[in-house]
Structures are given as structure tokens and as C-alpha cells.
Amino acid sequence: MKKAFGYGINPETLAKTWKHIPYYLIFDDREPVGTIILYQTGQVAGVHSLGILPQRRKQGYATEIMKHILNMALDKGATLATLQASEMAKNLYTKMGFSLDFIMTNHCLPTIEK
Image (tube, rainbow, N blue to C red; front, side, top):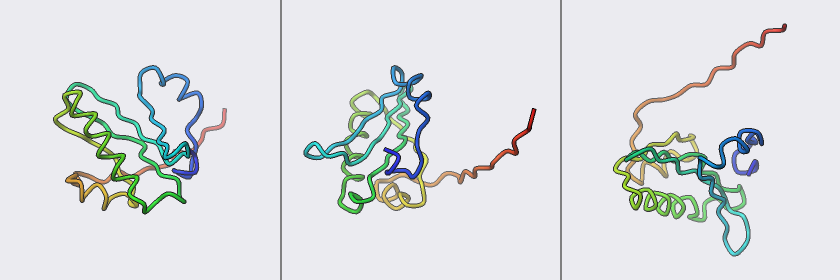
């Protein structure tokens, strides 16, 4: 789902984690729409990697996928949900009741030649 995020996920990462982390591909009438991850630890549901293909955005898929994944988490006993949001999805999550607790920044580390 590189097109949904603008970057790819390392295949080695997927190979090492697919047995422990539930990755979901979302389809509508056999056509791919997006992806999401629900990783739950006890009563805390971590929602990750919600991505919708650019041509499928603004059609309600993200909202429906979030409702579905949060209901799955509730069924598994979750009482708290956390996520990291891109600027693009911030309004969606705010409308769903999520709040901004802090802002993360990413930094590139300089490479060291050996």
C-alpha cells in the first residue's frame, strides 16, 4: 500500500512481524481501498497505518474503517485507543473524539561511514 502512504514498508519488517501484528488490507468490491493495523496490549488499542489510496480518499472509507477497527478493539476488551496522526487525518480523529496529547518530530541521523 505504498500509494496510500507515499512510502513503502520494508518487506523484512512485514516478514518478521506478520505473526504478531494484525495487518488489514481493506477492499471494496474486490478493489483495494486502504490498510490499517490494530495492535492491542491489554485494554489499550493501538491504531496504526490507516492509509487510503489517493483516488479513494474523501469517500468516507477512513471513517468507516476506524469505526470498524475501534469496535473490534472494544470487542477485545479495549478501554483506551491511541494513535499517531498525520496532518491529513487530524480532523477525522478529532471528530471521532481523539485528542492531541503531544506532537512528535522526526529527525534524520547523520550516517557514519565505516
